[in-house]
Image 1 (tube, rainbow, N blue to C red):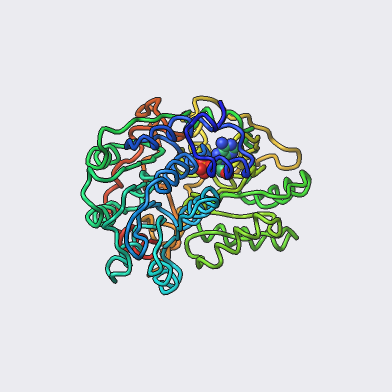
Image 2 (tube, helix red, strand yellow; image 1 turned 90 degrees about the vertical axis):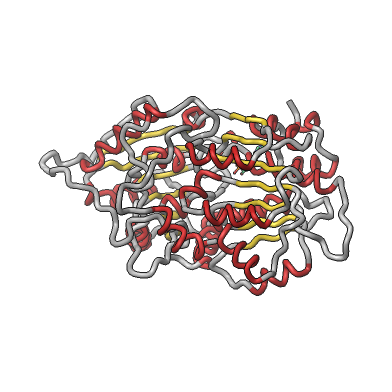
Length: 461
Ligand code: AMP
């Protein structure tokens, strides 16, 4: 099937051709015609499936095919995303796909100066991409008017709820024209009861769209485990990068502090490296990502939250320097490679402390990941397993901006969901990550939602 049969305009088909896309991805095949018809949709899809073009192309077409009156362009489409990185990427896609149209767009998120955003909003934009917190700041200052929004997109809705944005989302919804007069598109990798409740309130007879599950995506990725002692992981990583002549590798650590330390150590090993996590300023994060994309930075060390939304075409290598506490995060992490049809390699360095985490991941994947002990890096069998360090300070999730007052350095995922026993709740639903049961209450005393919205959403958004 080609793009031509989806009902897209010549301008959009041209932009798609210029991107080198020849065939629509499964989500695009299903979402584009439905959105063009004006239907609400609820789509199970993760990054890497082509979902951004799946909603952006028809959204652009619908806006371009009708004009609005008035001197200044009102915001006609609002796209909400959980993280700054994702907002920036979606904004880039909107610009790319809309380059042959007359529509204007801008992006607003926290962590950067508000005045330039106010200036752009003042000039009028058709499409606004935003993180919830900063959008509400604008609304509070009267610098954005959402009363004429025709299309609302909630991108990565599950992650937004995870990060405690539900109240902000509700506040944003209250600023939109009455439901019934607008089109609502909801994208989510998982479908917890919270998401279903939101969908029920928001969507009008939505078309349900499902695309291949994560495990199918993961099939294209060569996965391997290298058992190794914790103290020798850094050495092994440098060895793998050097011996394999890897030019671009994304490495995951569990904590921000660990990411910083590893990046510094790799630099000392002569490998250009940068860390990307929530305690970095937006400028530093953007610079690190740009350096990584253009090849100046060979190793990008990231925490799970910071990596969410990173879209780097054909990233060849992903390394789990430490396994994530939540098995689903493994799927998200390795989904950074092998994107949009290219092959990739995902390597996990696993020490004795992490055997249980590995078992949880394998249970989720419903298969064993091939394991290979490398010569010279054999684990010392006398080293006992120790409890996994969760990083220092903050136990809650603060979203990518982190910056919690009072030592919130541990960007830890463990409290998002209870890791073990997850598989039993999964449904064979849409989306790359497992559906159903994906979001559980935080354990007592770890109130994720409130802390996240207090610290994360306002700062990040
Ligand atoms: P997304 O899931 O929207 O983050 O997209 C993942 C990646 O797939 C991005 O790098 C897109 O540029 C790319 N992509 C989107 N649609 C297609 C397509 N039809 N063919 C090939 N690549 C695509």
